[in-house]
Length: 189
Ligand SMILES: [Fe+2]
Image 1 (cartoon, rainbow, N blue to C red):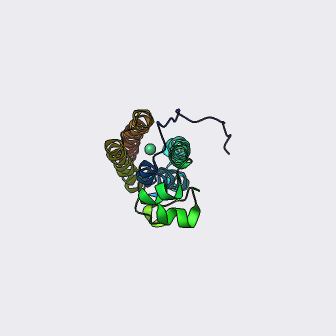
Image 2: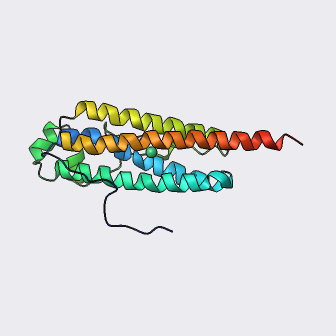
Image 3: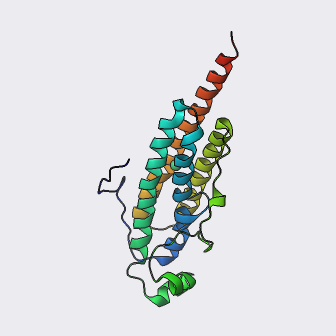
């Protein structure tokens, strides 16, 4: 069960209308290493992972939805005042033709989200290594988007999200060690 709190995890401000930046940011909305993929991956893995790390997947999976909400807010704010011409110039003409300025789960290149982005192997160590890789890829993607952005206010929010990926990666690494310790102890009689 979830309770909705009507505020963003971290404030989102944008300097001006910038549909080009929105196009890049959509990578973190519906892309392979984006926030939707992260949330769905972790919450889905909870059912077959050992009890000791279920809480961690719960916490991080839930937080990823809060990040998804931040990305949605950014994309909305960056495009809400854009004209059709500006959308087209930013490479969002095809998006505009299909969705106007509604958000949609696709990556920066326009490929729609797919469940093939995520995995659930049923092996706790394999799943956690995938999660660590996902966090590192998300961190790198945030860095590439920051490099493409000249909006200092937006970059402040992106740096917060980048840091959360670092924290998540560390927590998943700790979970691997917890499960490895557990596995090793079971071998001692
Ligand atoms: Fe994350």
